[in-house]
View: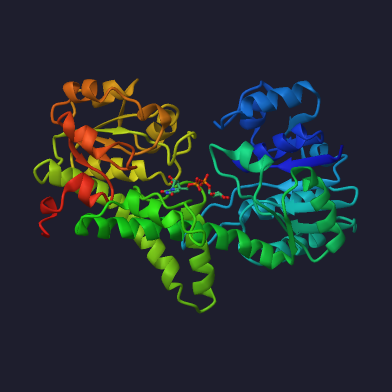
Length: 444
Ligand code: UDX
């Protein structure tokens, strides 16, 4: 059992702390936000993540996990402190490091015994060295410490499984023995460990996320070409994915990537390149395609609704940026909702868990209590988040309740043939042959 402290109770901090506690360590989670700590102490979670609430409960009951707003309390016996604070986008897309700076300063002022400071927040290359300088210059008297970069690769919605079964653990430090000690913490997970210098570790995180985002924009660009040429992108991706050099993951065409990581990280990496005099052509294209993909949904709705959505009722299934999360940060669904509202549409929506967050972000959406009530009396139905519960909807019932039989399947969840068979006008993403038909595109 090791004594760990985790600073920040967002997705990364909560999942990291809880999983380490579950592995038998003693974990104190520190957050300066009293509301969050009060909620956690009362057994409630400030975020939704499948399986996490039960795990937090189990570990607090077992006495392995506790929550505090005090750094002094949190760091009292700690050997390791994980920094898991937010790094939002600044005005030019650069990562805003104010929370990392504040955490480093407070750690420096509070620590009383040697400490390994592990940075899990996604930070620009060079931040590890900068953190070490902040700690040294803010310590009232010198106490030994080392900074290790250990980027997180957790996906929301499957974060616990991702933590417990990582593809790899990346550790970057100028202090090899500190990196080895952190590697020991991760040893029970039996994943390959890449130990490297701190800047390389920081870059691995950006390069990984930018590469995954590039795959998505790549397949989204292919989807546009498929639509025009009469091919089906879902089959194209399947046919490509069997090639071991390509693989099947992150090749689902859709409404573009969202969430707290990909949009922010691609932007921040491009910004880093730009500020160092480079022109990040590919990264810029990845972002441009992503924005275009979101616009496509509104354009399709407009086209199918006789050129204008004004005064029409458009319903949306799914508001979270992806399934199994209540997170609406950079959610493509909300971009679509805003655009429809700006064009004068009445927007109704249903999401199993993200409606509260979405109402806060886009107050004009009328929230409904089921997919069926959302679809009722609407002129078009847009399916935007691939929640499981949308897979088996009674589509005949949906169709009967709608004013017009129009469905735009932004995640290619349904069989175009089946929906057309029961009377829907169907549009998917990149399903030129099955979805729209070559002639409908006017190309043959
Ligand atoms: C991501 C990374 O996967 C994770 O390693 C990182 O550290 C945090 O960011 P997350 O944002 O939770 O995780 O979600 P992810 O499952 O990666 O999906 C990101 C976005 O891409 C979602 O909007 C999703 O719908 C979209 N996506 C994903 C696609 O459009 N197509 C795909 O094939 C895969």
